[in-house]
Amino acid sequence: MEQMTGLARDAKAASRELGRLDTAERSRALIAMADALDAGAAALVEENIKDLAVGRDLGLSASMMDRLTLTPDRIRAMAQGVRDVATLPDPVGRLLDERVRPNGLRLRKVSVPIGVVVIIYESRPNVTADAASLCFKTGNATILRGGKEALHSNQWIARAMVAAGRRALGDRFPAHAIQVVPTPDREAIPALLSLSQYVDLCMPRGGEGLIRAVTECSRVPVIKHYKGVCHVYVDREADLDMAEEIVFNAKCQRPSACNAVETLLVDRAIAPQFLPCVSSRLATKQVEFHADPESTPLVTLGVGNRPSTVRPVTEEDYEREYNDYVINVRVVDGLGDAIAHINRHGSAHSDAIVTANARAAERFLNEVDSATVYWNASTRFTDGGEYGMGAEIGISTDKVGARGPMGLEELCSYKWQGVGTGQIRN
Image 1 (cartoon, one colour):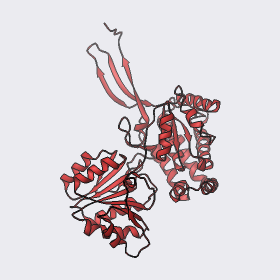
Image 2 (cartoon, rainbow, N blue to C red; image 1 turned 135 degrees about the vertical axis):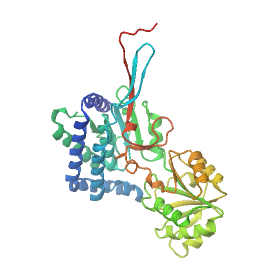
Image 3 (tube, rainbow, N blue to C red; image 1 turned 90 degrees about the horizontal axis):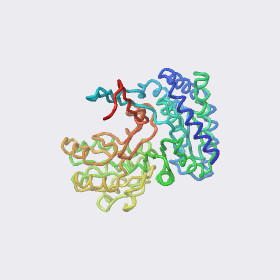
Image 4 (cartoon, one colour; image 1 turned 180 degrees about the vertical axis):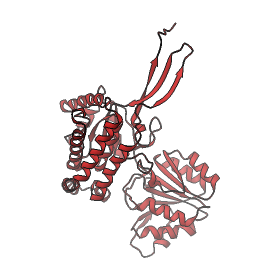
């Protein structure tokens, strides 16, 4: 507990110092951090190899190992994400609202940093750079708690970013602006999240179990993303070639991502034509199908002799985030049935409709209760980088506060400033 208190107290002090840096200073430090990640790519890969060995010893799944792996290309992308953040407009100090009361009191609503943000995540070392850069740009101190399987990579990234920031800004760089929890001890999380006098916000990123555990123990506000149970609904008026491309991309481009599709819903009117084709395409990636009784013979027809599995879908499957080459398939009785299925089984993350019917699309966009809904596009676009936010700190499925990909603006709060000439309240 004493170690976590020191960490949080240092972060609170750093958040005050960050508030004194101007936009140019923060951007200059971020560019230096990006350059340090590029220059140290080989050393970071070596640290990541140690983490991969830990991951294998822990028996991590193939999808989790994929999330853990850092390649030169991924490190370059990580560094570019930091550069992108550096060049984005500064969201701090924006005038959000202004009004003058009848007594002459002038009120201004201005965006400000949140303060100290704790990020708790699993396996993905790139989150360390993404979260740290976004928090730094917005004047927030960050405390990073990755999984024990990524400890070497996370610590190397944080050390490199801090050292680069010091080289760029000298003594003006807050020494504890970016910190990694140095212990894998599980008790560190509830200890840290009990310190509401220092910590302002927690953002967990990982499996549903992790996020529920964090939410239940935290005394500070938590922005949640329980899981990504995403859907694609192929309507009777869809361009079927387009639909096949979207489904294949949404499932196979990176199945370990939270915005990959987990359930395919197909209108009964086009199921006999569409399902054999799309299942044949998915089978080229050895996708496993969990199919309802009506779709099973159609999927089986498409799979043929290829080494894919078709098995009965269960109610529990419809609410499962596979993060793997597995997909649920269900034939539905039109648009209303599809919307009802998504709102019942989905996780309010990302869902898509493929159709040429604008009225059907508008109904889907309005009635599906998710953070992001798409018309004729893959669910894989739910990402801060793809939205032009630079790096992304997470995807919120909450309804209050931030929702969807969280970039710079979502890491700001606001304050009211009152400017008077001696007004008093009667």
